Image (cartoon, rainbow, N blue to C red; front, side, top):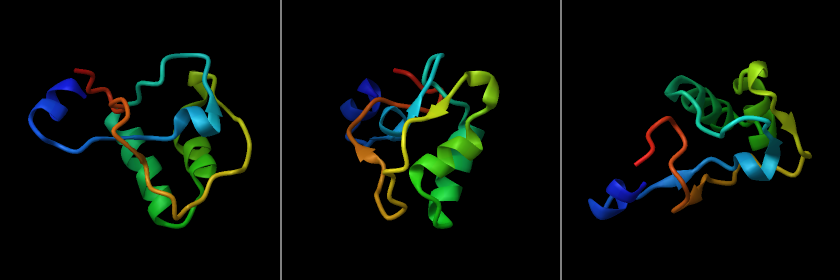
Length: 85
């Protein structure tokens, strides 16, 4: 995140904390991030997309069903895709 901001690149954070309770770190593999974004682009809510794409071994549980499929990823947040800076 720090390097991207320094380079003038826009960043976004997946709304994991808003929709899921995870027992492990919130760092996801790129393929999981892509799958989440694909589900949202196809009309799923963030909560549904996260529950479908986050592996069960991560111990993630949906917090509630307040997600909106038209909502974009939160801008300026932490990097979430295995690329920590």
